[in-house]
Each structure stands twice: as structure tokens, then as C-alpha cells.
Image (tube, rainbow, N blue to C red):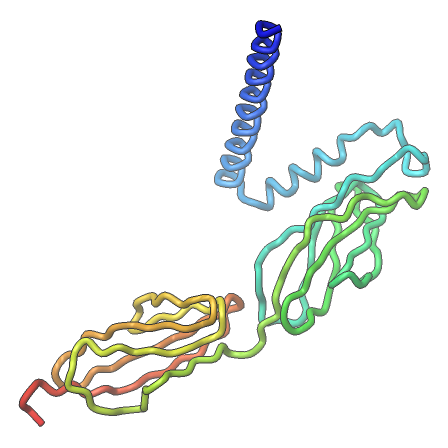
Length: 239
């Protein structure tokens, strides 16, 4: 009994290793294709694979189940309210798009399986999914969620004690402020850590005399808020 269990265990381990090796090889192949040909080419390859299914089963056949569509996620955020969402599914299949669980209508995929929708984004986060529908009204699984945020306002950029111009006599000077979560902040072209609540702090090494400080906050959609201040640093004993 022990021998049989060990043999089955070894067999299972070998099978698991083969699956892991195959998955690793497939992941490596996809990465190489992306690096060499780019994402659009790989996306088109997916379309070809989806359309190599057996053509002996027509859409009207009750046993036909459409493949789950795939949406092409080009970016996470935008400042444009109108965008186009592309995807790939079975060729000539009906595709329905959902925005925050609300239907945005249907379209018919082309011969190569590609489809697109023109949509209007809502302020904040928008969640899109797609579903394929056969002529026998059989639906595929919902696609993975494509999340995109509409950000059409410059990010917040506030400071706890910063004025347009003022004097300090210590260096480094600790500059603290707050912006919107997920925003990138640079101070004099140096990236600053921003926590989950949007708070940041940076130590400025100032020189004697005028010190120009440029603070830039940029969100994922490319919106920017920029502030410049002229700080004056006095060496000890100068005042």
C-alpha cells in the first residue's frame, strides 16, 4: 500500500511539473511575442486562435457555446469622456457590452472576431465587461473586467505650511503636503513617495540665497497641477 501511494505521489508530482513547465514555456512565448511584435500583434493572434474553433458547429446549434470575449485594455485612466473599447471574440458573433453592469448595446464581431464600441465614460471608475451571444441566444461567460477611470480635473496639491515666498534658516527643510491618492509627485524633478491617502513629505537641501522649488502632481490620465515657490535660505548669523 505504501509503495502504491508513493508511486501515485511521484506520478502526480511529475504531472504537476510538466504542467508548470508548459505554463512557464507559454508565458515565455507570450512575453517574447509582445517584445518582438507588440501587443496589437499578440491581440490579433488571439483573434486567430479563437476563430480556429470547429466550424462544423454553427451558432444556431443549441450545443454551440460562444467563446468568452476579450477586451483590449489600453490604459487605466483618461481625461477624455469619449473613448473606443476594442475586443476580440468568435467571428460574426453578437457581442454585448456592459458598463457598471448596465448594457451599452450590442454589435457584431467581424470575420476576424474583432469588435469595438464607442462609449461615454462616467466620472470616476468605469467597469466594462462583454458577453458573446449566439444566434440560438446562448451566452458566453462574462469577460474579465476592464477598469478605466475618467479624470478630467487637475489633482489636488496642498501644503501644510508653504507660502509663495518666505524665509528659513535651517537645512534640510521638510516640505509636507497632500494630493489625491494614486497621483505622482515630483519636487525639483525628484520623485516623492505618496502614501495611500495622498500624503507626502520631502526634505529639501537649500542653499544660501534664493532657492526655486517646483512641485508637480500628475494623475494617471496626465492631468497636472504645478506650483512654484521662491524660498530664501539664510546662513546662520546672517539675520
